[in-house]
Length: 219
Image 1 (tube, rainbow, N blue to C red):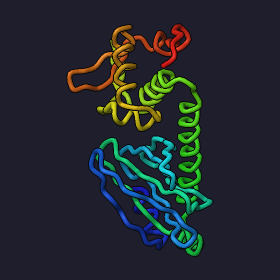
Image 2: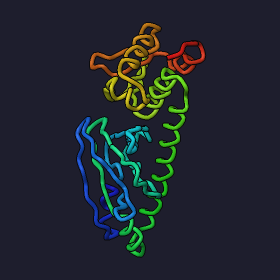
Image 3: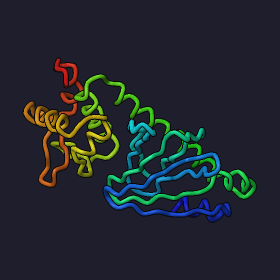
């Protein structure tokens, strides 16, 4: 409700959207239609899709993160896909500028903080995709999810939500067949486990962090 209160008090029009798990929306940003989105609740991942159908994962975003490109690009669009039930709020950047005199200082502070946190999410995804081998991308992705959306128990750490192999393949720029092979190898090496509801688990984070340094394969 914090963001909604900010917009209401600052007299800035807004729209809200609900996405169920695996739902997606297409977001195309142009100079004339420059409308950022804020994740009110939930988790999404954002794909950048070019006109030649090349796909790049930009980030995995959580509550408070902002979906916005200050330089609109006519040669691509964005697909926002929900990993769980998610609510988004949309507003016009023009309204944000024109209503500046009504904006509370807490709104400005929270917006700048959220923007900085969002940049960190984009940087984290860049670091994942910078790896040459898909297996290392998968390991780094799992570590990122364990850091950001996990449940820590005495004996294990579990990613809070079910993440399908198709989703992992989309995020890492691979195929489902390759991801299936990698996950089987990680399970065989006892690096990961699956809970009864198919959530990814690890019981030795130190071994898992060092896993990519102990294996020398070409996946």
